[in-house]
Amino acid sequence: MATAFIIPRSDNKRNIWLSKFAYKLAQYAEALEIDTQTLDYVNKAAKHFDYLLTLIRLTKEYQKEWTAYRNEVMFGKAGKIVSKLPSPIDLGPPPTTPDAPIQHRITKLIQIIKNHPNYTEYIGRDLEIIPS
Image 1 (spheres, rainbow, N blue to C red):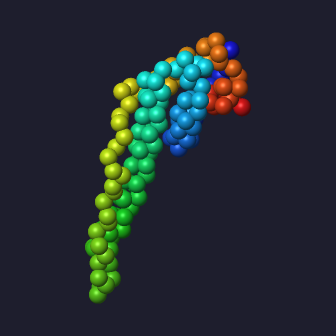
Image 2 (image 1 turned 60 degrees about the vertical axis):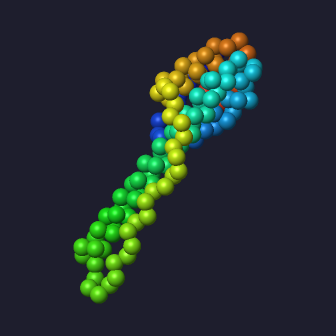
Image 3 (image 1 turned 180 degrees about the vertical axis):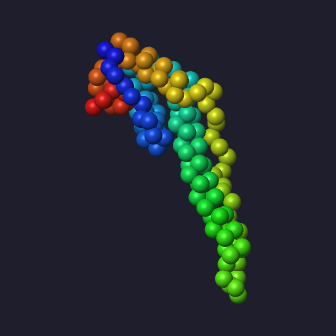
């Protein structure tokens, strides 16, 4: 019952999809015989990818803050006090890095799910691994 599936192409959409997939997959783990190690991997992958995208976004914003600060220091108005340095980025410790590339492993997992005898179109739509 394999039906076409396309993982979202943009990082933001892929991040949303992966988070929902990780959350919903646990609901079907028993029926689809998905082991705890696989569930752990999917959860780690979702958390790590979200962390990476957040860090990339904040780094871009941080670069803009430093550029504005540099411009203020170099070209600011005479007599105006220069503002404080931009605050460093602090996301806390990163989540555990997944032990295999995410896209490849998730794609293989989706094929395993679709080929499982308990797989249904309803499950595929709920996991968003087939078009709705």
